[in-house]
Image 1 (spheres, rainbow, N blue to C red):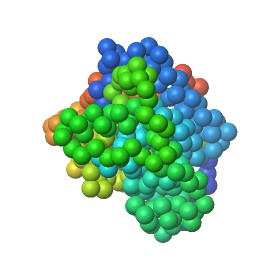
Image 2: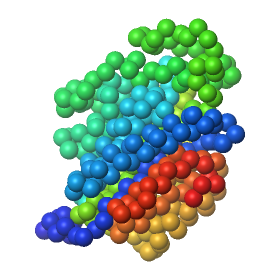
Image 3: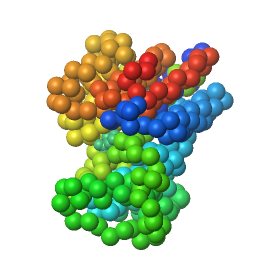
Image 4: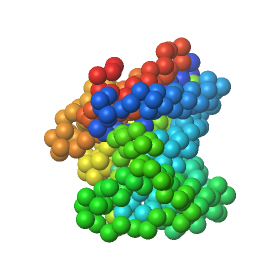
Length: 340
Ligand code: ASP
């Protein structure tokens, strides 16, 4: 019998906890209107309470992570699922990963276009396939085989992300793809009058949770970076880069320019600092984000949780959509860097 299974079979008196992010980036009070600010906070609150409800009923950290992320994927405010950014070819190409800290089992998908909730597909890869990471058409095929809800690619379309793509492609002198089949007709009035301007390139979502059994889990879901090309895959679905969980150390979900997070294997590096150097969780996340990531001029942030209930977040951008809640604790929802 392994240490991990002993831990699973002997529930501890551990109190549950959960932390979420909804992306990091240039998110300033000056460019955010009150209504949008309130919508983000309400959305984060809804997602964290849904995950917390799972944990409060004795559910697993994996279920809590998946529950919260599904809600954020379905919310067009975030760059995951519906509301994802567009690749340069005019498609929403979605990435997601999930990891179970008790067993080190993990599942991930890259470049999927038809599964309504990519986090559910990542979990199916973990539980119903012998593999860890599936991509593109093979992942779509597996999604159908696993019986997951399929949608037309236009399900993920949002006007503001489309306009944001067109703006970037025009600025960069790149070819403009045709409007996706099935997308609603273009609006008559300029997009700025329909929706307030915002740092809409951001909004990757992630969750880390600790359940009453003392098990932790992590998950991340994203549309990646806007105008990405050539089948680009970021850090989010790469185990150890954007997502990692081990009961021996901590669970981490990242957001930011994925190329830097891949080079630094950010999530695993944080876990290694906790496991091998004995760092406190906050010290470990700060070390990697404010020293290692900053040294490479990378931008972004992470959320993390440890089996003893420590919760942490760290980011080097002007904002990160984020929330945390622990059993018997007060809910915290924040956006800007000047908030606690
Ligand atoms: N990390 C994501 C990626 O590079 C994007 C983000 O978090 O904003 O795909």
